[in-house]
Length: 80
Image (cartoon, rainbow, N blue to C red; front, side, top):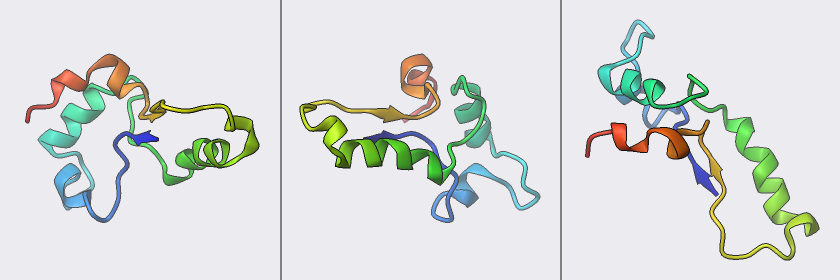
């Protein structure tokens, strides 16, 4: 599974200002994400359950992006 951008305590200060508005980096990420938002932690659950279940027992060698279409659309907008 390839999670996209999820707002967590680990990255909150990088992506949001004290007043809750987005930092420049946060704005750039949202601009490059067609779903126009950060992911919610529970949005990883469905893919995780699928990968751990018999429904995916013949699946191998793939990466499942759970990223609001970021990787398909604009991953190149984020500077290194």
